[in-house]
Length: 169
Picture 1 (cartoon, helix red, strand yellow):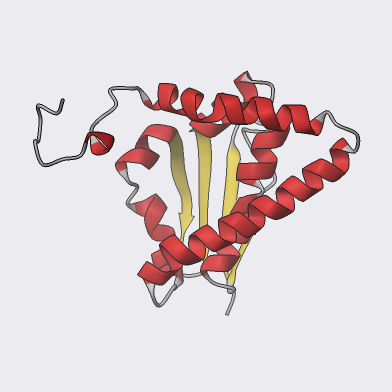
Picture 2 (cartoon, rainbow, N blue to C red):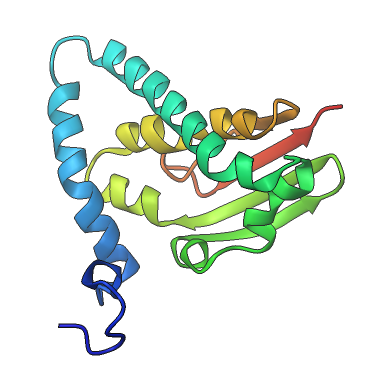
């Protein structure tokens, strides 16, 4: 029964779970299933397929949920998620903006709930393939002029993630 707002559907109410509890609930079963599939013959090929399909899904998600609402999809629009992070992003990532110019944007992520969740479940390879690897495709889906480089990720055991985006004219 909803005592907070009688007009709000029960599905839309606060679950009273921490962000970490939500991530554990959301990802532990997924991780187990993917780990089982990855143990089948051809694990390397499976991971390549997982990366490809995850990038396709991420690109489609960006096009449907972000790029369309941010027309004209310029570099300032792209950076907004980090400059003005949502409540969700503030709770699942800890990062600093290292550089912010008209052509370069770089952040250093020192805490990531996705990386924590997947690493604690022995699935950093799956987390990288389904989440981190898709960052490259996501920025390209937003605007083909954005190029991303990264040499370290928390998911792969590094001390931080170094996301570096360049606006190419």
